Amino acid sequence: MAKLVFSGPTREADAESARAAAVLSGDPAHVHVIPAEQIIRVYTGADAPPAVSQRIITTEAFRDRFTTAELLAVVSSSDAQIKYALLKLSTKEQPIIDLDNPEVATIMARLVTLGLITSARSTAILA
Image 1 (tube, rainbow, N blue to C red):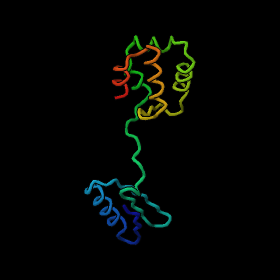
Image 2: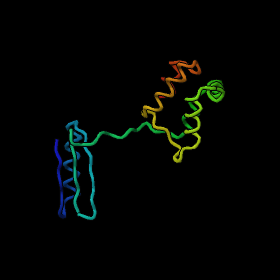
Image 3: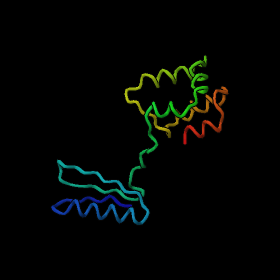
Image 4: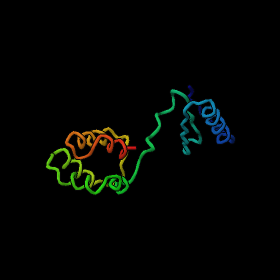
């Protein structure tokens, strides 16, 4: 666990060495370059921020994970939560879905509760 600050002419190499050492030892690492101050901060171990989800897909790729029958069941639903989710999905500024977003998990669970998809399909869609 460390919060390291590197400056001077060897800051890039020194910061990379610190990052690589942390990763090799199995610790998370985060590098923050601050050009205006000509420094590089390296956070390792518990001091490193949590990793950002890498399970982000386009809304089109998300839609394509559903079968035609499932999509028809979803868009035909009269459930207010499902209508709200479809509205949010269709008006997103960024056409992406974070599969680890708790809101996505909640809506998928709602689809299962309503019988629009099975639990096994929900798991497969979110895989």
